[in-house]
Image (cartoon, rainbow, N blue to C red; front, side, top):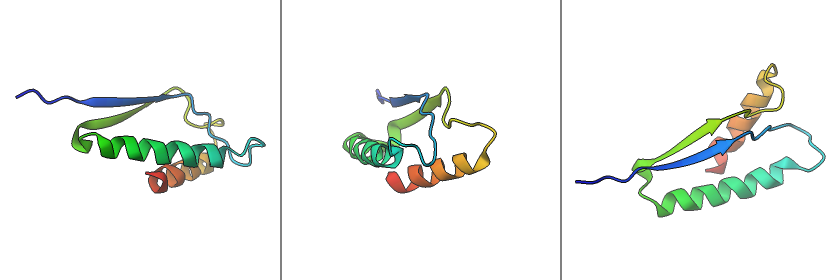
Length: 75
């Protein structure tokens, strides 16, 4: 049996809060689209890999919390 695995690779998101380009709108649309694509695939064989910088300021734990909250509710 051949099981195909799908990897969605995300890199260098540089998430920030209160960014003038209203990153929340972009992320909301991105997560909505990502959720649709995962549902179209056999979701048990889909993996998401993050590389590079997820947030802009790595020393700020609130940014990670905020990003994860959006990511969890976005999918």
